Length: 126
Image (cartoon, rainbow, N blue to C red; front, side, top):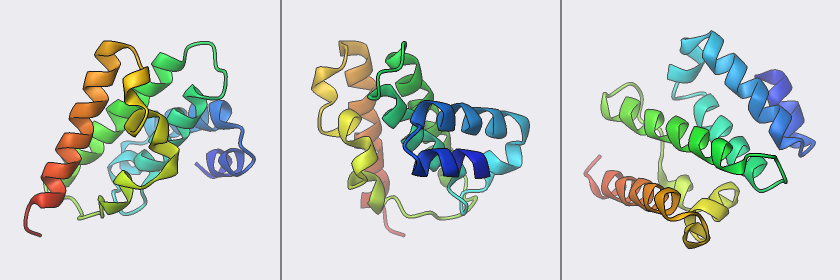
C-alpha cells in the first residue's frame, strides 16, 4: 500500500493500481478497514489508470467498481461509518461519474447505478 501511495503521487496509476490489487488481495484486513480508505483509494487509482492509456481500461474500471461496491456493502453492515460525501466530488471519478455516458452502455449503466446507490446512502439519516 505504501508503494501504491508513492506511485499514485507520481501519477503512475497503472502500477499503483496493481500494487493496491496485490495488497488488498493478500490481506483482507486492509480492504475491510474502512477508516483507512485503502479500498476507496485503490478504486480512485484504478479509474485514473483506466484513462491513462492502459491496454484494457474497462478491466480497471470494473475493478474500481467492485472495490466501491464492496466498500458500500461493508458500510451497510455497520463496519465503520466513512463519509460518502466526497465520492460525489472526487475528481478522480470524473470519467465514471460525469462522463459515464461516454462509456460502453453496460458499464455506463453500472456506474450510474453506483452513483444512485451513493445518493440513496447519503439521503438516509445518519
